[in-house]
Image (cartoon, rainbow, N blue to C red):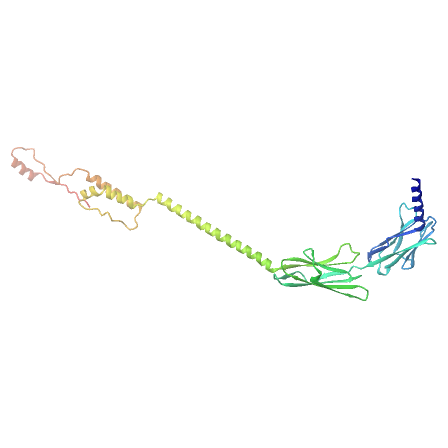
Length: 359
């Protein structure tokens, strides 16, 4: 067991002896304007001066006794790592510029030195040409995207409704300006099948998320089809509603007619009944005439029929009385002789005659 501990101790001492200095990260990539941080740590407590260099030029000096010394470069500084007892320092480069790109070196004077790489990238702009577009279904639509002011040359791709488009469906061209900035252009052909969101995305490695620009593609045929569906639905609804209203109206008319027939029966029925069943015999006897059973007024009313029926009944009642003799003789109180009596009666007393005329 003691042998194992001895081997571990010897290995640790050998590692410390071989690695006097550590610089991390070995590569740093930032966007222009961001800060870049590098950490330099030493395992040798005998160091006295730590020198930081940018592309071989001294940028900052750190003394183990006095700490960070003044620098002629305004955008660099250093911070001690907490708990390191002054043996680890963080070199900070603020507001990086394109000319800061290159090598960053940590040099422990007389002990060791390490070098890391710094890359400074630039984010440009991106724009999809044109505004929202309209197209007929099945029509081929061309979209153009341009990304300008990027360093290094950026990567570009397209999305339709958040789905990445195959590289076979678009082309890419690139050109470099005098300031080593790149402009990338791309054309995408889309077959209009349905309304979609078309986006162009560009990025460099220092970007956390790609920069994108997009437009809306509206397929006209799809919108027209929706309108036609609504029109057909409204037409069907209107037709069914009209048929239902006509049906209800017909039912109401039939019910109203039947109710009217029950409330106001035909006036011809009682007239025919009264004339045939009641008035035919007695009226004919009284009036010595005949009743025309087929007689009917033009546009008779209920009042006319009622009056006719009452008249027929009055005539029936009148005909039921006993007939009075047409001639009545009155005799004298004298009973002397029948001839004298008859003569005197005929001479002295007038004859009362009653005549009845039926119209």
